[in-house]
Amino acid sequence: MTLDDPLLRLKGIGPSVAKLYAKLGITTVGHLIDYYPRAYDDYSVVSPIHDLRPGTVTIKAVIKQIAGRYARRGLHITEAVASDESGSVRLVWFNQPYRATSLQSGRAYFISGTYELSHQRFAIMSPALELVSDLPVQTARILPVYRETKGLTSRHIRQAMHQVRPLLTRLPETLPAWLVRDANLASRAEALTWLHFPATGEELARARERLGFEEVFDLSLASLLNKREIMVEQAPAVPFVEEVARAFVAQLPFRLTDAQRKAVWQVYKDMAATQPMNRLVEGDVGSGKTVVAAMAAAMVLHHGHQVALMAPTELLARQHADTLCKLLEPHGLATQLGLLVGSMSAAEKQRARDNIAAGRARFVVGTQALIQDTVDFSQLELIIIDEQHRFGVGQRTELIAKAGHMPHVLNLTATPIPRSLALTLYGELDISVLDAKPAGRQPVVTELVPPSSRPAVYERIRQELAAGRQLFVVCPLISESDAHSGSSAEKVYEQLAKKDFRQFRVGLLHGK
Image 1: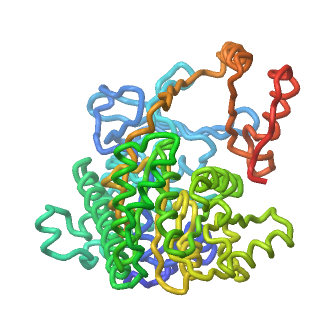
Image 2: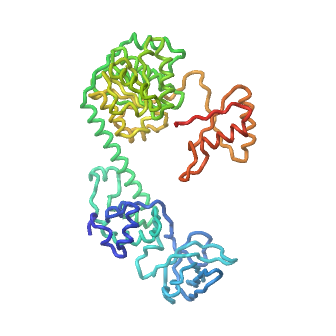
């Protein structure tokens, strides 16, 4: 048996069952081995019947009595009595009439299930059983629980996995031997064996450690290879001009934080080199990422080049355009700002595209409309991508290709990412963190309120609105559909505008 063999090679898997596995993305033996459990039920501790307590249990006992009967409305109940040296316990199955004939009276079984109260008597409900003389597959061990589909349960998957167990011990190593040794890792063969057939919690922990390490290692290696490829590219240098930076800062209506100053200087140094900048600026909402982007853009515009900023939504693109216009206006650069979004009329889009191609629009803000084939840039040297994780690799690559060469790229994100995780996920990026908010920013207070407190919360909100303040209600959906249920913006708007806050002005705002 090999990893490339179809599942049909396994006993009990015919064409119809193979179709069920295919729904889970499993068509070969290799796919089955790589189908990791989503959880585990621990039946590894075998208890005497006398010591049973409610919950998940496993016993080793002899079946002594078996009987089946029909109850109300056609419900079939199978009952048996299992005994060991310490006592006896009742076993109960519903609608499994075959149990009465399949169980062998007088034989010893491993029995695993939930010990609970049923009709004023304790019993093990719907237990799994295996003869002690057989190698336990479904009982007396830590049982993996897999993601299932209709007609295919974890029990079936465990049975199939048991057939490929000998292959697990022969799996080739995928990490360098020195790395496995120095990091004190389990081998890949051991890890996958322990993942599907853990004998102890320690084995399971070791398996997860090894597979988790390999996943992080692969991501880190891929990121470093990406960075290496980028480093051999050439980008036009954007020399740092101190007067431009000083003039921009002097016109700001606020003082830059130390974190902003550090990030801007890192960006300037990157752009002054002939290696393309590929930097991520991470900072919470209100930390000043847009100002950092604007200062980078101002330096590029000073040298006569173009800048493109791509945002994930039209709402955000228009917000950026308004903010940037105010920041660039004191320097006479606001007239060079252009906007290209999907809701513009055909004539507006064509006029925007003409200005971009001719270089009259040298700072272009837009959505995915920027990557359309009809958009041509004249001298694109800096690309700013806001909330970069919202775009696919293909979309970012298409925008970069618009430059005709490798431009400088500045990524922005408000998603808080621990530095260790950021280095793993975005190892090809240099990272700047804005960890301080501009002076005067009010601290954010987060409260979790139960639904029963909604009237009191609404009354508190009415007081704030009456004092001239604003309220934003964020909903997960724009409108309700058959596929999704929950609080939609349209439904909540109707409720707030017509009932709860009808004495105030209520607006509806969403991406459509």
